[in-house]
Length: 68
Image 1 (spheres, one colour):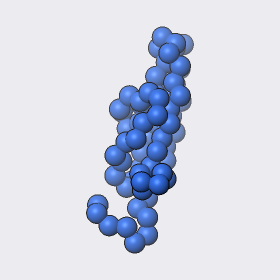
Image 2 (image 1 turned 180 degrees about the vertical axis):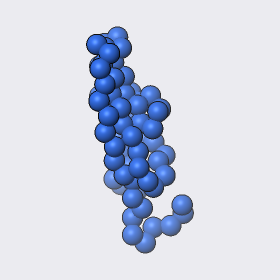
Image 3 (image 1 turned 120 degrees about the vertical axis):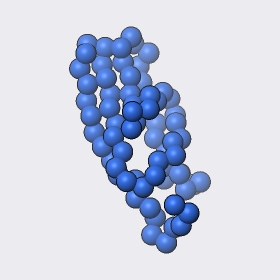
């Protein structure tokens, strides 16, 4: 978590044709700050050769935090 209380995700994605990354279906490139609600999030990396990898993480609300 960054000093601003946001979750920071950095995606270093190759410029090679066919290579991409998405978080919850939204394409990402470079350093990105996303507004993600508490709960599960899906990360998918697609490769130029047609393959892909998927992973997930969960955004949790800090104990005592409010505003959601």
